[in-house]
Amino acid sequence: MVQGTTSDAGKSTLVVALCRWLQRQGVAVVPFKPQNMALNSAVTADGGEIGRAQAVQAQAAGLAPHTDMNPVLLKPNSDTGAQVIIHGRAISSMEAAAYHDYKQVAMQAVLTAHARLSAQYPVVMVEGAGSPAEINLRAGDIANMGFAEAVDCPVILIADIDRGGVFAHLVGTLELLAPSEQARVVGFVINRFRGDIGLLQPGLDWLEARTGKPVLGVLPYLMDFHLEAEDAIDQRQGAKAERVLKVVVPVLPRISNHTDFDPLRLHPQVDLQFVGPGQPIPPADLIILPGSKSVRADLAFLRAQGWEDALQRHLRYGGKLLGICGGLQMLGTAIDDPLGLEGAAGSSPGLGLLEFATVLEAEKQLRNVSGRLSLEDAPVSGYEIHAGVSSGAALVQPAVQLADGRSDGAQSADGQILGTYLHGLFETPAACSALLRWAGLREVQVVDYHALRERDIERLADLVEAHLDTARLREWCGL
Image (cartoon, helix red, strand yellow):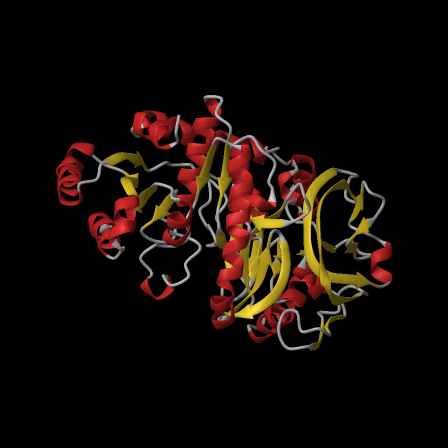
């Protein structure tokens, strides 16, 4: 099991690296995260929903994503509450205190999924969540040491040296664990190091002497590296061409699946800008309204920021507007939540830019889909994760014709506005190119996003081979 001293220490990345390293050697390995809290999710082969990071780890292991890989997923819909997803299906929205009481039930789901995977695969590579040293969360823990103790697995502790204070992070985390948990930690990995390793060596020697535990290796900082973020928005961009398309994404409080925009962020002809609270929306060729876990609340936030007026001005000047999932719902005339699925029950007027309305229903739509974009009849694939059901005259002119015979989304008569329920549509090269031409880019350079991801997974496996103690790793994996 890989646990981290902090969030974003590199747990997800190390699990990806270890999965691919083992897969290269012909070892059947499967990723597993007991509990994940994230608004970036993926649809599995068995029709459920898991954290997007586990879908990438599955790719590294050469597997199709499955709900057993992430049996408990929490999708925050307020500062104190979240939708609880068990075995890929949303069961309820709970406040934090209520979920704390529910953890015993959630733990059974975790252990059941882990037992099924353990029966099928010789190696289950587990990722923890946050830090195991969160004292206030230790009682009833199912995500870190509570799980490790329950299934009796060894733990590797990873820390990010780029943040600073790496030795304090490692020693402090170890000190805050119970004696049995300390004994479970078999070694350390230091992540994102840049510089002269010789200058770090005295610290590594001290750490091993101080704790009695080995440093398994030091992973270097990778430049030009990308893996989909589990939660935080990654705003790094690659090198850009001289002429670029200006794309703006307003950052909503409950923005979901912002990994939709990673192909644009990495595209050499796209300047992608995330606009946060208190910032005006700058001039752009394309504005994209993203997915949202709380569409009505996020629409109210958008209006409070003055962004609705900015959208109208953008359209008057001929700019293009795209809505994805919750962003699509905002484009319509109304959003009704009669069951209070995303907050207080009620209805909100939409932006009124397309003639349709949306009702949130209890049964969430979860599908991996393919089809053809209305733009250039380009092939597209993606996935749907939404509770809303939309209906109205605008849907007669859909954005996508799906392979299963359904139509998806809508487009305006003047061609300026497009809306779709499909997440991941920029990952298909032909669809991405068609959308960029629609937004105003004349000659589009084709970028294969899947190939970029595969390249970086391979780079991570190379780092394991070059920089970690692989003999010890094989021993702990039971190989």
